[in-house]
Structures are given as structure tokens and as C-alpha cells.
Amino acid sequence: MLGVTKVAGGTFLSLTLLTTSVVAGGLAGLAISFRNLPDVRVLRGHVPAQTSYVYDVKGVLLASFHSEEHRQTVELNEISPELKRAVLAIEDSNFYYHEGINPTSVARAILVNYRSGGVVEGASTLTMQLAKNMFLSHQRSYSRKLAEAILALRIEQVFSKDEILDMYLNNIYWGHNNYGVQTAAKSYFNKPASELNLAESAMMAGIIQAPEAFSPFANYEIAKRRQALVLDRLVDLDWITEEEAQAAKVEPLGVGKPQAWQRSRLPFVTDAVREDIINRFGSDMLIRGGLNVQTTLDYNMQIRAEEIVRNAHQNLRRSGVQADQMALVAIDPRTHFVKAVVGGIDYETSQFNRVLHSRRQPGSAFKPFVFYEAFASGKYTPSSSVANYSKGFRDGSGIYRPENYGGDMGGGDVSINQALTVSLNIPAVVVGQEIGLDRVIDLTRTLGIESPLQPVVSLPLGPIGITPMEMASAYATFANNGWKSDTTMILQVTDNNGNVIIDNTPKPQLVLDEWSTASLTTILQNVLRPGGTAPAANIGRPAAGKTGTTSGERDVWFVGYVPQLSVAVWIGNDDFNRTLGRGVTGGGTAAPVWRQFMNMALENEPVLPFPAASQFKRPESKD
Image (cartoon, rainbow, N blue to C red; front, top):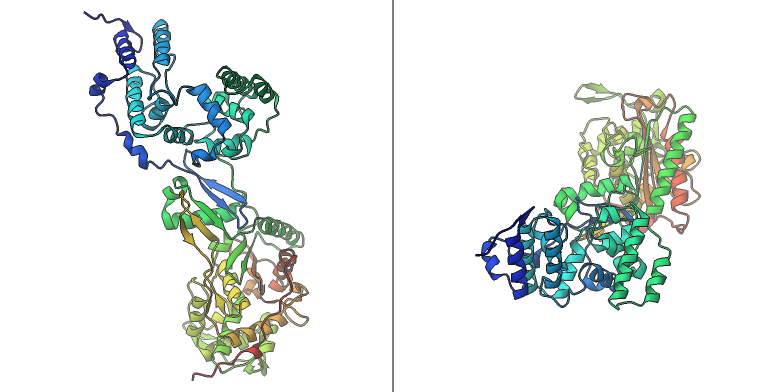
């Protein structure tokens, strides 16, 4: 009768059965007891959780999003031969010769475990490790080892050796939340797995057994000892020479730093991208789907924009302007690609992105929408006279009588050119009533403004909140003389297989009348000249724009453009009831910030003219 000897964690019978089965070359008897093990064929369609990456328009990495598993899979031929050899040497040098289990290793492990009274040494082949990582717990027990062996045999029957090695290298844990060889190589050595040399590969291979303990981030000396162990093993196998091993041992290593939980380089940008992707595909797709997101943002422009806003805010505070916040957004009118978005003074203090989510009164920066619609109606030209006086207009709460800035009640008639250049309020309200405010609101919808607007009499003076993004986007269509694409911060998104799932290639459409747009731009250029409300915005090249200052000096704006860039600058307080200070205007505070940003952003851009209205046919009156 076969005797049974009890040992800690199992029985000698189990060990004997496993040994006999291995030596015999099969585990058929034991397989009956494990018929409920998972079907290894599911690995054929298995897609591991992968990290999603966000880049700027030129390919600069901005941020990564992932679950617990920070992973980027690569093909086997994209992994350094040195690394593959080092891993096989230390983990399973007979990998290409066994069929899932290694009888010699099993026999050695059984002897060691029997003598110690428990499972202290494994006999895992690389295939068995893969089976454990993909299907089983990491608890040390004989039953788990038996299941591991059976699954390994099944895996070897279904998959080729190269497929198994591919899955192994892309799935195992390498420490510091790095799963798979690619993210580990980038974390430890700042390079892709394809570029790892012998010294780096040996250290990487030495980490596998206990990643957190053997990591060079945790203890560089221990990591070096593990590296030497791998190199010596490679020599013993005659896979490298002694000279190669010695050279690798003394080679300086440029060890990187953990990357799994690094903060975004441009948090205002990547937060917005994250929100967009989640709204489209859900959070699981973002943190597990291995997306590659190319944004439209320019990293260098964004960094300098943040610096300009931060310094400008400090200067304003020193000068007595009581502004807690500032926002800036830049859009390329030719594509409607967002190039820079500064959602506030300091992301660390406040993560709220005012460019996207803060609806603030644009004040007189709204007037161009009214006067464009006047031109498009066919009834007005820039030289048309309009009343600069009013007895008042009836609205829902009684009689509304507009005033010009500073309480001026106006008098006489003025041209539209003059009214817009010096930002008179009364003519804007008068024209709004004459052309119809519903038409003005329809125009804003055409230009991409989605914020709620009502046709109140004072609408031409911008009393209803609009976001800086909406203002810059609308003005971008003016800058492109009526041609509009969808404004976006995302250029392209590909999935983990490289398939394009978002393609925001511009598809411009002519949405405005060209003569009316060119006429409006001609007047808005006068705003930046002496006699206009924003000579402080003059940048020495053709540029157009409009100031905005709300009642009580709670919000001040400058929104302006050249053919290559449309930029909105807003200054205010998150508490709308707080004033910026008596006499603070968009022309005096926001315009200089706009000028500084534009001078920086246009350093290498040619000077381009705007099209003249004379190039286009004036619309005919439809009334």
C-alpha cells in the first residue's frame, strides 16, 4: 500500500504523484481532478488592460491614464533580443525545449520542499508562470502548483513558444505598477524595450522574481547584484562571453524614475481631454483601453501661455486690480484647433477650468455679433448712421433705457464704424432691436455658442454668461472670414490596435457672409488703433478685436484675432459679486495680456492681411 506522509502545506503523496506524472510525461490522471480549470484558449482573444497616453500636436507626451495595471503592449519583435535572452536565462533556460513543465526542475523543487516541510522553492517554467498570472492566485500550495502545471501543458498545446513568450513579457509585473516590458523599460531606463542593451536587460530580468525588493529604485546595490547573477547565468549557458558579462557589469546605467502615477505636464489640457474621452467612450475605455490621444495643443505655447497669465495676474494685483482669476484660450482659425488653454492662475490651487466651464458676461465683446448680423441683413454698411440716443425700450420688467459707458446718455447719430470702434452701448441696443435679437441668437448658435441666451433688450451689451472657449471659437470664424470647422482639443484617437476611432481633420464650411465678415473685421481693426478702446492690444501687424467690460467692473475681456490665431482673455473673480475695482476696463487690463501672448505666439508666423470687403459682393436686403 502506498503510504502517506504529512508535511506542512500538503502531503508527500501529492509530491510523489506530481513527480511520477512529470517523469512519465503527462498529468492525465490529475487532469481529471482539475476538469473545471479555465479554458486556456481564451488567451487567444485576451486583451490586457493597457495605459492610454495623451500627446500634444507634435508628439510630446503630456499624461497617461491607467488602472492599477500601467501597461503598453508591444510585439515580440519590438523587444530587445538581449532582454529576451536575459529573461530566459534566469527564469527558464530550457523554455524552447520543454512542453510546459521541466521534469528536472520539478524534481529539484520537490526535494527542497520536502526537506523544508513546505513550499519554499518553485519549479515554475515560464509557461507555468504565465498560467499562474493569468488564471490562478499567487498563494503557495501544492494544489495550485498542480493546476499551474496542467494549465501550462494545455497552453503549450494551443500556443507557439513565441506566442507564449510574447504574452509572458507583456503581462508580468515588473514593479512600481509597471505591467509588461514596455512600460517597465520606459520607467527604469527611459527607453522602449526595443532599445535595451545587455546591461539594462540583465537588470530588468533580475527584477522579475521580486520586483519591489529588487528594483533599482528601491535598492540599487541589490539590483546590481541581481544583474550580476543574470549575467553570470548567461555566461554559464554560453549565451554570452565572460568579457561581455564583465563589460555589462561595469557599464554605467542611466536609471529613470517611476512613471506610473506621474502627474500631467499640462493638467488643464489633459483634464479636458479626459472629460471628453469619458463622455464619448466611458472611463473604462480610458484607463484600460490603450488609447493614444493626439491633442491639438502646442506644449511650448501652452507653457508660455501659463507663464504669461501667472505673471500678468501678479502685476495686476500689485497695481491694485482685485482679480483672483484669469483665463486665456487660443484657437487656430484655419482649423479651429485649440492651441493653448489656461483655465486659471494656478492648477494646484484650483482645478476648475474657467475656459470651458465658467460662463461670464462678455460685455461689449458681444457687440460684434449684433453688427455682423446688421451687415448680413443687407440694410447696413460700416458707414450707416444709427441713433446714439433712445427714449427706452419695453422689456419684461418695464422700460429699459441703455446708457453709454460712464453714464453718457448719448445724442445724435453715429456711424456703425464709430459706434463699434469706441464701443457705444446705445447704438448696439438700437440696432439689435431693429434687426431682431432672435437673429443675433441664431448667429451665435451658428458660431458654436451653446450657452443659454435670451432675447432681452440688453442682449447686445453682453449681460448673459458665455465661456471664454465659446467667445474665442466664435471670433475664430470671423478671423477665417466666415469659414468654420468644429472647435476641438483632440486631433486624433487610435485604439490599442492602431485603429483610428476619432478623426477631427478639419472640414471647413462657409457659415457667414464673406462681405459682412470682412466689413466687421475692418472695423474691429480700428479698436486696436489710437482712438479705439484697445490701443494697448496693438501688435504691429493686422489684428482685430473687441474689449468687454461689464457693469460694476466684475468681468473684463479682450477677444481678438489675426488670420492665424484667435485668442480670448478674461479677468475676474470666481465670486461674481466681487468687483475688480473702479475704472478697470478690458482695454486697460485684458488687452495688454492679449498683446503679450500674441507677440509670443506669432514670433515665427508671417504677417498676413485680412481680406478686404471689396473682394466680395454685399448681401441684398431681404426685407
